[in-house]
Length: 454
Image 1 (cartoon, one colour):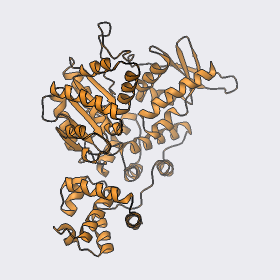
Image 2: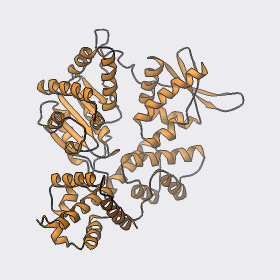
Image 3: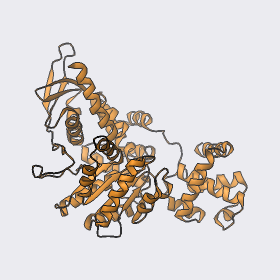
Image 4: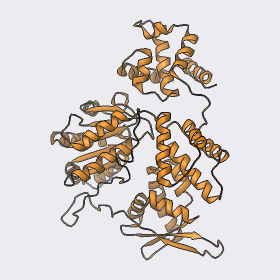
């Protein structure tokens, strides 16, 4: 049983790893050990009561779903805080297991009155911290939540880098709709899960059931649509589902790590439909938003940090919200498990393990000056209408480095060189394509980036 237990627990761990940030997984789930499974109860060994309380407060729905998917619906969960490693003695804590059992079939029946939306109930508009980088996306999301399927924002296509809050925002839409329109069937699904469901249905000759299930949805949320790339069967099936729901005035909400015009290996007929509604970007959080997110999470978790430490985290955990969450969670874990106060030395140690500690703030003005000096092209020429090869080259370098080295949105980067959002996207695509075969261009960009980072 021990070997089988470890195999099953590894399957649970894989589900958890796919659904949380790497930092959250390594801090809270990687140390867990499955030590017993009997009488429909799984026992996990943990390091402290604090770990139990944190998992129960923040991850119990996800953990329960993973356990029920692998061990079976209704499996109970207990934690054992180890006291004596020799005897295995410890204090046992039963889990609250708040989640409901997942729907066992794709076809709802009279025996299944509840619809499992697969939403994270902690992701709401109230817990979504607004800043300049996400203000428009949040406003669009609120509009869709108020009138699903009845606005011009259909589909609502939200894109941006990893960890900027896309998943939070689309879950917030779903949760708000379930409150205001409880009769509607809302479904959140990752693109990877949709792919696996489709493949299983195809293997079992149940494609009609698969289509029937999805055609019953009133609000369909598909996260990370870029993972459909290269999957012809999955794309073809999703195309038919998209058409049916859209024609039925059902709401479609999609997320991606890039805009539709930047997606690769997706059928043109799908990309065309992604552009029917509203495409909107969430940029990386700026400094003020990072501080606001930290303040919110500190209040939620009952953590007190000095202004100096808050400022240090906000300055250096700057790529996405997950970096901020990971830094705070790791500080709490270090402090509790090692019985140490959170001071600047601990903050510097933890943050340096999570992210590349930032040297100086790089601005678009820095990039403009550096590129113009390197290429011997004036700022006036870059911002003008010239299409000379060397001017276009300098302009594209500025756009490329602006995307890599700053928190600015594509619109903000475009404003610096006086170009439209579409032109910025075209420049980024051009640079990306050229760098695959033009090694000299790649070295030039790397050299400029290195100089700017000094």
